[in-house]
Amino acid sequence: MRLWVGGRCGSYFHCLGYLPDMSSAAEYLPEKLSLKALEEASQGCRGCDLYKDATQTVFGEGPKGARLMLVGEQPGDKEDQEGEPFVGPAGRLLDRALEEAGIDRREAYVTNAVKHFKWKPRGNRRLHQTPRAGEIEACKPWLQAEVQAVRPAAVLAMGATAARSLFGPKVKVTKDRGRPLDSPLAPLAAVTIHPSAILRLREHDEREAEFAGFVADLEAVGSALRNAAR
Ligand code: URA
Ligand code: SF4
Image 1 (cartoon, rainbow, N blue to C red):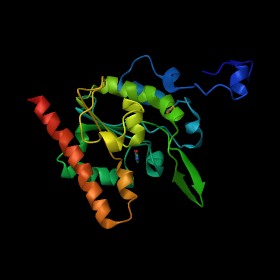
Image 2 (image 1 turned 90 degrees about the horizontal axis):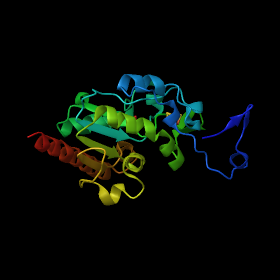
Image 3 (image 1 turned 90 degrees about the vertical axis):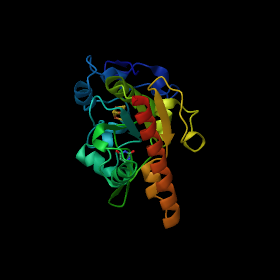
Image 4 (image 1 turned 120 degrees about the horizontal axis):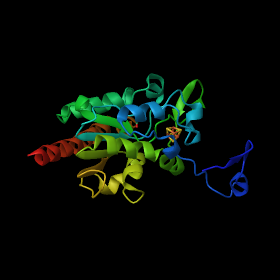
């Protein structure tokens, strides 16, 4: 946390750049940790610098009793404008994969590890930038609060950013995908690739193969959920 004294940063070492920026979303959490209160409070979050260049906070979406929580990286260009997670190209791919896996998106809670869009200008486009570890850490209180409010039976991290936020830096998508992880967050926990990683592939066959792998990971979570409900 920064100590502001009389309009100046009170931490001498921090201002000299010797201390990491320890700001976080924690101080913006509401007292009542309902999804509605969380979403409202998240709109005013200044827990890291990412709010500065973004249009709005993009909070998670879905029923509070959702059994499945899907976690992405951060909102993209379209999500930043619309204020909803996964409504752009990655969202369309996710919708298609969920449908193939027999999972109803309306029954899942869909969110991101980082709630503001990080980008840099490229011509007149806004180019996605991967959030830094410090930004993932700063935003973690929102994700943790969402997990507490929803209490899903299964949580699936899509991509490295979500995997890091939910399970720490040791869990890696390539090494750990497709197998159940031990986590205090939910009885079922797993990682898979991020839908945008599929969209970035240039080769048609490679893209199809990765898409099939993504659907298989979703199917595995879906059937584990069905077995757990028995
Ligand atoms: N990519 C993400 O990780 N999240 C979104 O909401 C959109 C794209
Ligand atoms: Fe707050 Fe997260 Fe946005 Fe940073 S990215 S300002 S921690 S909501």
